Amino acid sequence: MAAERTLILFKPDAVQRRLCGRLLTRIEERGLKIVGLKMLQVTPELSREHYAEHVEKPFYPQLEEFITSAPVIALCVEGPEAIQVMRGMMGKTNGRESAPGTIRGDYGVSRQMNLIHGSDGPEAAAREIGIYFSDSELFDYDPTLAPWTCADD
Ligand code: GDP
Ligand code: MG
Image 1 (spheres, rainbow, N blue to C red):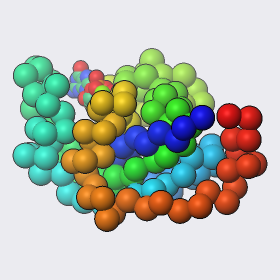
Image 2 (image 1 turned 60 degrees about the horizontal axis):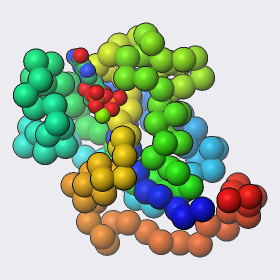
Image 3 (image 1 turned 90 degrees about the vertical axis):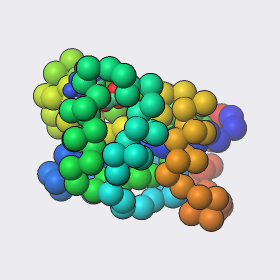
């Protein structure tokens, strides 16, 4: 199974609520590999680029206000079917509809302040990784534990 990369953000509510460590632990314990990680302040320009598909929607002004309200932590995460694996771990957009056991279902009841962003497909992942990371900020290293975490792939 070829490794896939996805762009993850710990949103301002995760940073403010000091949940980033827990979220990172979940990703690592699942067996996914961190290949890039940084803290940054999303600007309105960056928000419009990232959320291009939502810019015309009625909720966009609120979303921009939220995503620019405190720093975020951006990660590039790699693993077999990492995009869908992460979407599954995140749960549904609305925390109230998200199953217990998912990140959004365990830590929130908001549709907007839902703690985490994850790319929704390969095209989005490639585009979003390119927005947040330069090539030199992404790391290739030997996944020493891979035989123990995805040996049947
Ligand atoms: P995601 O892929 O599950 O993150 O959801 P979407 O791509 O549909 O939306 C992007 C982000 O916009 C969500 O994660 C929420 O933070 C926010 N959002 C989505 N729908 C709404 C809405 O109806 N109202 C508000 N205020 N925010 C929303
Ligand atoms: Mg989305």
